[in-house]
Image 1 (cartoon, helix red, strand yellow):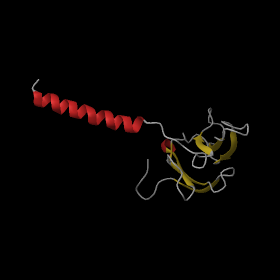
Image 2 (cartoon, helix red, strand yellow; image 1 turned 45 degrees about the vertical axis):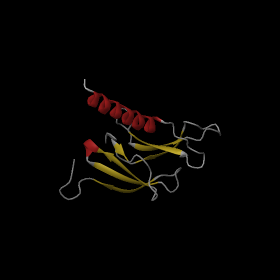
Image 3 (cartoon, one colour; image 1 turned 90 degrees about the vertical axis):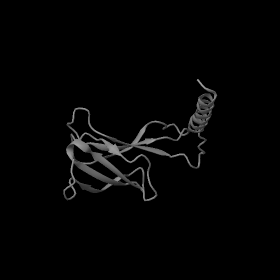
Image 4 (spheres, one colour; image 1 turned 60 degrees about the vertical axis):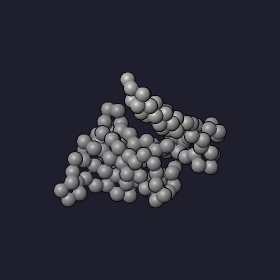
Length: 129
C-alpha cells in the first residue's frame, strides 16, 4: 500500500474514532431534565382485554421505581400496539399506533397519572395501513 493510501486510511480511522467516541460518550442527565415517567403502549397478552397505555414511574427514590402507576385502556383489543413517538413533545400529546389494525390514538399527557384518549382514527383519506 502506498504512502498516500496509508495516510488516507489513517485519516479515515481518526475521523471514525472521533465520531464513534463522540456518540459513545455517556450522557449526563440531571434530576431536573430526567423524565419522571415512561409511557408504554401495550396490549393484553391473550387479546381478550383492552389494549392500554401504561405509565411507569422512573423516579429512583420514593419506592415506586419501575412500577406501573397508571393505565388507560383504549376500549379496543387486539390492535397489536406498534409505534409511539420516541420522545414526548412540548404539547404533551402522544401518538400511538396499532399498525396491523389500522388504528391510531392521541393521548393527552398533561396529567401523566391520568392519560386521556383525545382522538382515535383509522385511515385518513387514501392513507391507510
